Length: 222
Image (cartoon, rainbow, N blue to C red):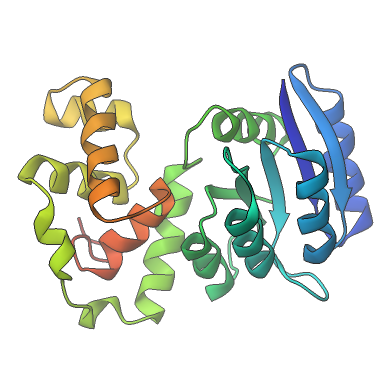
């Protein structure tokens, strides 16, 4: 059973999400919040597995709430799945840096919503890699990825770890990376986990951001 907390300041959207998730097998809605401050309190109280987090809310927004939740939550910390429209600005990029596990578009259909919750709840750190890639490409341009310098830590990676990180940032799934490199999915996970440990990263989403910021992958390139 995946325990979900729904956070959105718009009542109708929040009610719709709660109703949909509550009717889905294997999902339990443990609470709903209308702003970030309420979300932080409810996470501590209900210990959800997944938090559906809106970004733009009155008072404490989604980025600040994500940072606070992930900083204060005991292990295992909940996965934060950001609710967003496709044309959001640097707030989404900020959510990635704060440790959010991925994105869910607000106009997504019911099946996509349930698949996203299941994926994140099951430990997959990115949902809809193509969406994430396009978002990170857009925001990395805004923060000057073209002038970013390669940090020393990236040199700690092996060639294979670097390649897996690069393909991950391009939006490929573990299965697709395995096919590209002619290795098993388990080996892909091992290389990516080692790379993340060496770079002191908490999520696959943060690994994608680092790959763009360091120029390992360039917007629109590979």
